[in-house]
Image (cartoon, rainbow, N blue to C red; front, side, top):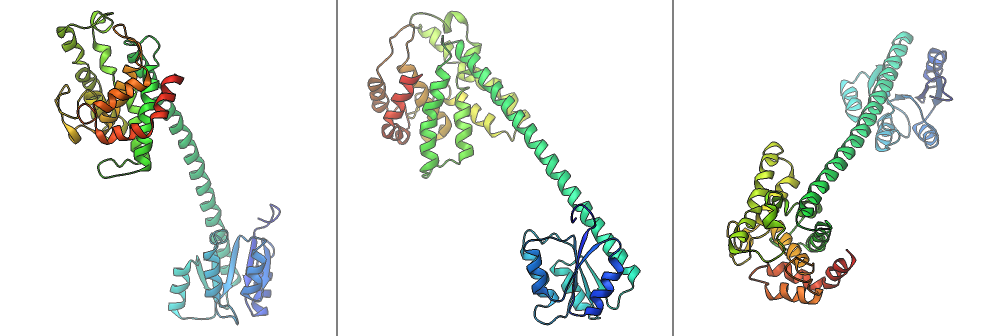
Amino acid sequence: MENNEKPVVMTIDDDPIILNSVLSTLKQDYSVRPFKSGETALKFLENNTADLVLLDYNMPGMSGFDVLKMLQADSRMREIPVIFLTGSVNGDDEIRALELGAMDYLLKPFKPKSLIMRVRLQLELYRYRNRLESLVAEKTQQLRQINRKLEMRDRITLDLLARVSDLRDHDTGTHILRTTEYARVIVDNLVENPTEGYALSEIQGWDIVEAVKLHDIGKIAMPDKVLLKSGRLTDEEFEIIKTHPAHGAEMLRDAVKKLEDDSLLRVALDIVYCHHERWDGAGYPRGMKGADIPLSARIAAISDVFDALTSVRPYKKAFPCEKALAVLYEESGTHFDPNLIAIVKKNEKKFIAIAERT
């Protein structure tokens, strides 16, 4: 609309009689802009717009088809409805015009009432389409905002659940923070340097980092007298502790069944159940070996053990980072995936910085 008043109708025709006829027919309700050539009309559209175009087919220089192609090629102008005005009775021309994007086709000489009705109809459809697109965009934005809120709520819930499980076993609740950051270092390296068997997309990497937070959720089911014991565990007590991966997995299985397409929950289930498996098959609860252990769980195992070694426990002092790293390297190929340990070696400074910062 021009100045929020009459709709702007461009008419492009080399015949001045047709231009005058269109002007006299439409001027009462529309702001008519007549042009004798496609070149001058397109020049006008560089800095202006129109609500509808009436376009002649057969013109010297640029034909109506040429002009229509130019309009369709421009993202700003391709939505303007075009009605072809032509004296040709060739049905193929009509089909070609519609295929190229014209909205309607009117033979000359036209009846004034017919032109008025065609223009009115196309402008109403144009306004309706724009309104519909505006409503869709508005609803899409609302849905995005709702999804962001739901994602934030889910993330807060996940963090709270992880923190609750962590506080059952650690005084400060910072174990999950450090473990998550160690896992992030390994994951970022795998995303940036994909190799066979270790390639991760950014989404897969994000799922692993977030899911690592829940690795010890099964400890919620452990009895206090065992979990909080100040000294070393007896063999019988250790067997009880070894059940926490199975307890945690059982907690998550129902959620996974209800949300089968939730990749984060599936990854969390793998980590919770398998983060105490060992590369050599001597781990628990299933005795899995090598690459049969989910990659996410192999990453979590390294992160969990490194933090355990560098943290104070009732039965031990914290290891210096260098000593803890030496333990990881010594157990490469037995406890840990050697390919992942190689990544730790390349990122020693990052591991040490995380341990000293949190």
